[in-house]
Amino acid sequence: MQRIHEIPKLHAYRTPDAVCLYQQDGTSVSYGELWQSVQEAAQWLTIQGVRPGHRVMLVAENCAEHVALLFACSLIGAWPVGVNARLSATEIRAIAEHSEPFLLIFTTHCSPAAQQHAQAFGARPIKAPSFHKEDQYAIYRPDAAAEASGQAEQVATLVYTSGTTGAPKGVMVTHRGLLHFAGVSSQSRKLTPSDIAYAALPLSHIFGIATVLLATLYAGASLVLRARFDPQDLLKSFAQPGITILQGVPTMFVRLMDALPSERPETPKLRYVYTGGAALDPALKKRVEQRFGQPMHHGYGITEYAGSMFVTRIDAPRTDTSAGYAVDGVELMIVKEGKKISTPGVDGDILIRGPGVMLGYYRSPEQTRQALLSDGWLNTGDIGHVDADGALFLTGRSKDLIIRSGFNVYPLEIEAVLNAFPGIRLSAVVGKSASDGNEEVVAFYEAEHPDAIDHTALREFVAQRLAPYKRPSQYIYIEAIPTTASGKLRKEPLKSRFS
Image (cartoon, rainbow, N blue to C red; front, side, top):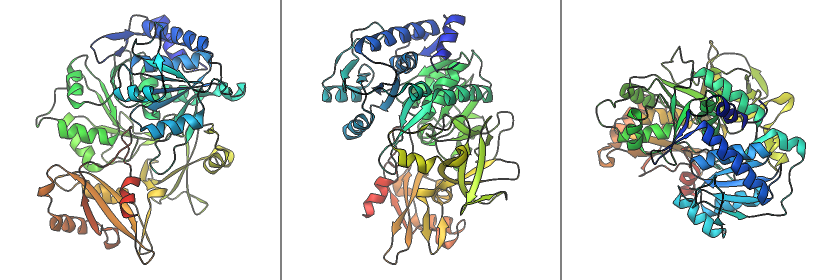
């Protein structure tokens, strides 16, 4: 295979009647039907004037049309720029101005948010058999220059980073990387055509594209495709059509735990539970495993790599919160102060090399040079260490590091303690500049019953588990900690409260 559209094409010819997508309205889409939609969408894009190397911006939420458009762009050599319709108008406009798409497509039939954006861009109905009658499009830059053929052939999609710490960047994700990881991920979960995976993670996010969509379709399995995560819908889907694979970011599982009944849910076919996209909290892992009676697997991936780089082994579930072991083709190097660290347990900057490394940041050569180092190494911006067995443990993001009294303070460690306190369901720790040039540790938290949180008891709980310099000086209740559309914690809005 050379491009990602060859995955559904293969199964369309082998098993055309097999179910590919289970939709929200109760209908399903077979592999044969999906491939027909892909071809029709590609033809429509070509008629509009889209050529290889052109960008096509998909303002969407998960639906069959979104899936077909991803593969249709691959078929004609265009670059899909998937953006979650729940982004603000300012964010959507900024990405459009940066990527300069030839046209924009809005999946308005499944997304009220997409409908609002469509109106802002003066979109009009799409009249083509592969689209829903309510979907719309707008020609944005008819003079947009197509990328040179060499680069155009390599890039499968532009994925814009979630922008948790600044302006989003367009990551050039390659066909090679996605195809390699689809096979690796499918194998790591032992997927077969009889599996049914749950897909509520946005297909505009690398987790949704690589781990959920492409890995599942690579095995000829099926997806329960949902525009948004709904715990009650998920509970129903365990029985019909019978979900076997459940994947999501940690915050999705936090919301799911809050919505579950006190007794163990009926999950007759569920065989694999996995979380990624952020560090795994031990308290959450324990809760999920108790409620589902399944080990909670974990992995480590970033937008700049086409899929997870580390995954726990399905046949050897871990009792800790390790992100597991390097997948096939991935090399790891831990670096501290410019020197490679070989000693187990010592934290340092995580550098990665492998077939999934991005081509670069689109139209951002300086940022590309900062991330892509010599000899193909990618600076992930994360901090962590490996144990003697080679398993990776994430310590935090370098940008989130707090300097307190000359010590390095990693928010993840503090959040793990706070999340274990009875009544706290989610926390986020940030640094606050102090007058002496130091930083204070400030903790925000969500609670099941805010009035029931005793701050004196909480401080005692923390004091028993953390050194003095790691203990928060403030505990601030917040109704809902802000997250990105893909479920990552957004700490910038919390930090801005102090500015």
